[in-house]
Amino acid sequence: MTGEVWLSFAGAIGGLIGALTGIGGVILGALAFRRTGQLKALDLRLELRRCERMLTSEVADIVELLERAKKSHTRLGAAQGSYRSGAMQHWLAEWDTDLANAKLLREQVIALGTASNSMSQGDLEMRLNAVHDLQHKLAKLAGKYNGSLIKDDESRVQLRADQRAAMQARMEGKL
Image (cartoon, rainbow, N blue to C red; front, side):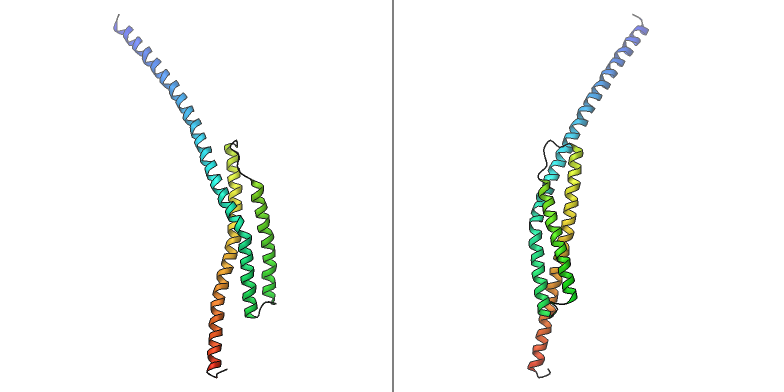
């Protein structure tokens, strides 16, 4: 055999090895892509379950928070002598609306149920977005009434200070 024949055999063998390597790469790439999709779906399922548990826990507490805020605000208004004021009536009307919204959020969370293992990746993403939207609405509502409770506490501190000052003035005969 001449050198040219050996070179053509070597070229053919090299080409065959390259083709087999290419085919193997395509197969391994397809398997890796499929596995990555499965892992992403698993990650989405885990995140969705975590978010759903948090949402269920938070929505269970929202009505109690609103009730506590109403009790605090009305008691403070009575102590300040502003229970029948327009501002208090406006606050109570807004509270009624927010209570209805909280109950609606709770119904929406209950209607969500739990995610199915058979959901596609797209369905999982849509469901996760819906859960995040509900969490955002709930957090906004809870933040509003947590803020109201903080303001009420600050107003109580000021009311007590004013009452102490008035009592001191009475005791000293200045009033």
